[in-house]
Length: 325
Image 1 (cartoon, rainbow, N blue to C red):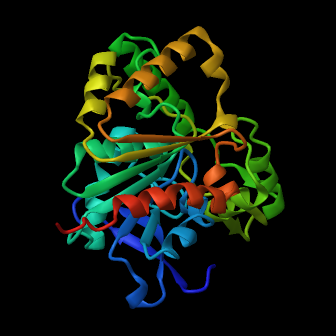
Image 2: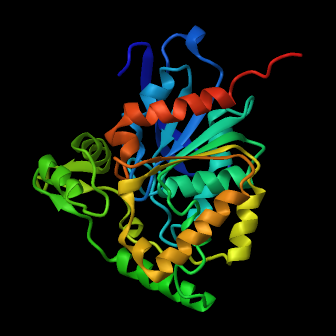
């Protein structure tokens, strides 16, 4: 932890949704060092606030008050009621409630999200500009919610509903993963070839997910098994996706890890999707992209100092007080 940064944890009992989200916070230890700005961080799929343990203190060191949440069903947050489905769209709707519950409404808040969380903050910035000033998207190659990707699945709407129901039904009967030791759980995370990551990144995320059970003398993942695989019930057309990008009036910084590309990007459908992404970038009024050729998907945690060196100058420039004429 950098000198001059304080860390705390807690639970948010959302004012409107009546849902409990766990969170971590970092802020300057001395009130005089706070720059008056706040950053809300949202992690990626199957991750939690531990994903930002390395990056958030570096942002706070520059005067920002940072809060990172555990998404519903992940980390220490509450699980959804059995009658509900996990949905990117629903989580976008949590963002203003989080801001209201934190009592951060006196000044607009910066959004920063990784991977799936990047799609959520992108959509949040477009949907709720009343609450937010700028958006930072970390390695969300689609620049979208899962459901904002034309051609990702069958175009027939009934197919989306059927597929999402089938996936959810399978997940509901999956037993939670168990491990004999904490180290075994860390190695499991490190073994995910789609998302290679540094050991410190795996440890930060896994420790937030795990609970030791004395009765069985093992460690169990506590996140909701329904989060393992998700298919959105709503998908947008290309025209709708373009309109969504055009509606984003906030400045957006997109930091992309070149080594974090997925195998599907090489397929014919994947190339078509990425062409759509390039088109959306040109529709955003204030868009900046930085690409790192030497990092993987979790670069924000694997190499937090480097990521901070990319994000902070852009943030500080956007938050610089306007000069008086």
